[in-house]
Length: 159
Length: 159
DNA sequence: TCTTGACTTAAACATTAGTTTAAGTTCTAA
DNA sequence: TTAGAACTTAAACTAATGTTTAAGTCAAGA
Image (cartoon, rainbow over the protein chains, first blue to last red):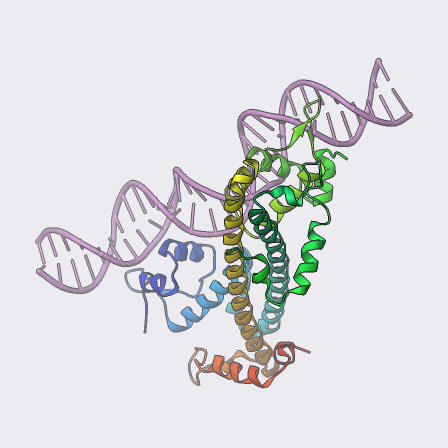
C-alpha cells in the first residue's frame, strides 16, 4: 500500500509541486524514498497529510505546522505539547469563525440595503434628506426588521 | 466632520500606509483632498471604509473590492449589479464558514486523540497492535463518544 | 531499444498584500 | 520663526505561498 507523489496529489487534490514545497518546508520529514529516489507515501503518511491539510485550510502558516510536525516526530514525550498546540489552534479557529459570522451579518445588512434600493429604484431612500449621506438609522431599521423575521432570506433576498 | 488619514487609521485600526495602498489600488476613488493635497475623509467615506474592511476581512481580494467600488461610483444604474455582487460574496462566505466548521470538527477529533493519548501516557493506544499506524476505527470511536456527550468539551478538554 | 510519462532537483518567477524608505511639503505650537 | 509631527509620493523591499522552468533520472510498455 504505497503511493507515489502523483497518486497523493490526486487523492488529496493538491498539486505535486505544492507537496514538494511542503516537503522542503519541513512538513513531511517522515516520507521515505524508493531506490530511484522517489517519495513513497504510506497509509500513516496519508493520515498525516490529512492533519496538515486541515491545519493549512484553517489558515495556520506553514512554519507553525512544521513546528507541530517536529513535535510529532519526537515521540510520546511531546504528547502534551501537541495537545496544547491543537487546543490553541482550536481557540484561533473558533475566533476566526466567529469573526467571519460577524462579517456575514454585516454583508447581509448591506444586501438588505441594496435589495430595498433596487426595489425603490434608487439608493436615495436610505439617504439623509437633502444630503448624499446614508442615514445613520438605516442599520437600526434593518435590525428591527430582522427581529420580526424568522427567516433572514425573506428579508434580504431579491425575487 | 472631516478626518485626516491618521485619524482614520486609528479609528479603523489600519496602518496609514495600508490606507494609501488601498487608495492606489482603486478602493477609495471618492476621497477628496484639502488645499495641501492631504486626503480628507468624510462620514460617508468612513461608511464606505467599513464595507471595504468587511469585504477584506471576509477574504475578498483587493481587485474584486475595487470592482464593487467602481460600481458604487456609477450611481443607481448599478444597484442590481451591486446586490448580485454582495449576494455572491454572501454565498462565498457561507461556504467558507461551513468549511472552517468542518476543519474545527476535525481539529477537535485530533484534540480528543491527544487528550486520550496524554491520559494513557502514550499514543500507542490508538495504533493497530504491532504496527506504527493509527487504527482506522479511531475516528468511529470518537464519533460514538461524541454522540453520547452533550458538551463536546467534556470529551476533548484536558484537566 | 526507444519513447513516454512520472519522477527528481535547484532556481527563477508570480501573486497578494502590504511595509519601509527616501525625499519632500505643510501645519501647529512654542 | 523654527522644530517637530503629520502628511505627500514613488519606488524598493518583505513575506508567504506556491508555480514554473530547466535539466536530468528512471521504469514500463510497444
